Every structure is written in structure tokens, then in C-alpha cells.
Amino acid sequence: MALTLEVYDSETSTWIDKTGSCISLRRRIRPEGLEELDGELVKDVISVGQKIRLREDNRIKFMGIVYEIDRRHKGGGPESCGFKAYDYLIAYDRHVIYRLYQTGTKAGDIIKDLAMLEDIPINLNGVEDGDALLSPWEIENQKALDIMKSVARGTNYWLRMKPCLSYLDHDGIDDYTKVYPFEVYGWQAFTLERLIWVPSSKPNTDWSKSCMLGDRGAGARAAIHHGYKNQNEIDGIYITFITRKPDDSPHLYETFQTITTESWHYIVQRFRLSDRLYQALLDGQIVREDTIPSDETTILETNPDDTPYPDHYRTFTIGANVTGGERSKEKVAYVRWYNVWLDDQQIQHNLNDPMNPITDGLVLWLNGHRLENNVVPDFSGNDNDGAAYGGVSQGYEVYPEYANSMLLEFQPKVIA
Image (tube, rainbow, N blue to C red):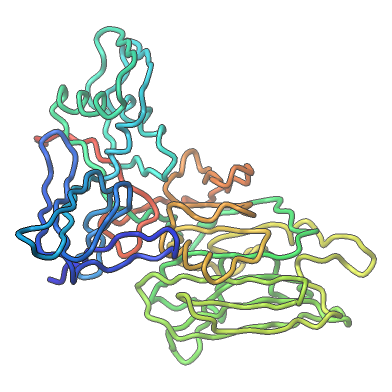
């Protein structure tokens, strides 16, 4: 079992390994619900408010916020820095609330209501109903954290906040998620990123496609997608950008990359009109780069007669080809579209801190931590909500390799 202590540096958008300077570390869960991480660094410092996480064999076991520090010298020795960190529940300590909950309100509904005070993605799948109020409850000038702990204590429930990777699960049969219409004309650049879990099962036909704008088939005008091909039983993925040639035929800028299946992979595609540069990245590394000729039409441009492409080219689909066809059995943790070119540092920021992505130019953000009434909400603020078809389900991993949300658990201490 290998433990790694890391703190987040917002200036460089990276997690910095502090394991080598850590001389003591203790993790515990307090009875009232907060998970605590205490430690001491030597010849090193840490700041109040910094994000901190503890990895165990590459799985995130704790993620929280530094709450207290104590810098000191011991007998003329090197300076040390003691610290105390709590999980993200501590963030609710800053919310002073005024609420009136009516008779019959479930304890779980109170927890869910207060959970919405934080702007980080919160997965509420771990919140159970609990008991109902027997009389109205009026709350004035109290901290949300105190109320949440009080509800848990009064109902004999556990209250926990755990690092989590939420995702949309597509079965490869009839499940897909669609966003439409999705207008891209007039953009000067785009960046499309997604975190996907690649299955080991091969498609039944030659191609399966996912995360598409446009259509790869005959007569395709322009498209962006990734997909899997049943070729020599090689585990790999295609990442494709399609333009239209002057003769109206498609031109595929495509790369095939071997990958580890049954695991998560980070895909980015970006393009800008100023120099017509296209790049595809896999797990942070550039795997294809092209300069698109000026006489080829891309998804950001119009037809020669200045009319936009047909409506289906504005449809963005996850888990299937835009027009149907073979579907992909995969999990999608998040999808984000930008109408700007994200540079390498910004991409690194999003990979290292997916719960707080770059927001400049963000036009679509399907994070996967909420799926209600077959609607996948868009957290970019642009109302580009996704519609889930065929029984798309929501899943999550607790203590994941990547965390795009926090799982809030409100569950009875004793389960019969």
C-alpha cells in the first residue's frame, strides 16, 4: 500500500507531491461526520484554504480543504508546518441559512436542499430519505454545516462526503444521450474534451462511434468523434476530425491509438480558424496534428453558398452515431465543449481539477453527477441540457483515480 500526499497549486494547475516532506499523518472520521486529515511537513509549507488529497495505490482516498496550519521550529531544528484538513463538508460552515421546512419534510430532503448551497458538483445518490418532520422547523441565522450534522445526529444517520467519479453508463444497445440543437457556426475555435471508460468488448460491426457532432457516413459534411473498430482484435480507439473537400467528399484526419481497456482515458480535440490548426490529445499527449487546407470546410464554417449544414450536423450525441448505427458501450464521466482554443496549461488544469474547470468560453458541460427524469443538466449555464434515451443509467466510483464530483452520503448507522 503506497500513500501519496498532494496539495493543489492553483498557479500552475498541478497537484504537488508532498509525501517526501511529510513526517506524520493521521486520517480519522469524527463522530459528527467530518473526515479529518492531520499531518506535519518539515522544511515545507502549506496554506489555509488549499485543496489537499491523499492517494492510496493511485486511488483518491481523501479530498478536502486545509483548515488550520501551525508553523514552528523545534529546538533550533528545521521549520515544520503542522496542518489540519477536513473533507468538503467543512465548506458548508461558511453558509448561514434561513429556512422553513414544513411538516412531513424528509430528513434526506433537508440534506439535499442544503447540499445545493455549494457550487462544486455533488452526487446525491448516497442520500436516503430518513424520518419526516412532525412539525414545521424554522431555521434562522445558523450555519448549514451545523444543521446538516444536527439532522444526522437526530436521525442516527451517517453524514459523509467522499471523492467520487460520476458517469453516464451506456449499454451499447439502445442507450444514448443527445444535445440539440447545438449551434457552432461563427465560432473561431473549439475545444472538445471528455473522460471516457473504454470497454474491452468489441463492436458487433466494423465501427462504433461516440461523442459525435456530425455524421461519418457517406456524404458526411463535417464531424468530430471517437470510436472503436474491430480490427485484428487490437484494443484501441480512433479519434477523428472530418472536413469537407471542395468536391463535397469527406476528408478524415484520424489517428488510431492502442489503449488499456476497462480503464479511463482523457480525450481532447481542438481546432482554431486563425491558423487552421487541429490537434488531438489522448491522456494529455498530442497524438495527431494537422493544418487544415483553406479550401476544406470545417464544422465551424458554412457551405459555399453561405447556408449552414442541415440540422442534424448541429446535434451532439454521446454513446451513438448521430444518425443511429452501431452504439458504443462506454461510460462517460464528463463532456465539455468550448468555443475557444484551450492552451496546454488550461487543458492540464481541467485534467487536474475537473470539478472546477476553465469557464471562459465554456458552452456545454455534462458532468454526469446528476441524471433526473432522463435529463442530463448542462452546468455551463447555457441550458444545453442533454436528453437521455434507452435507459441511460448513472453510476459512480467512490475513491476513484479521477474525481469529478463529491458523493454525499446520508445513510442509517444501523441497517437491518
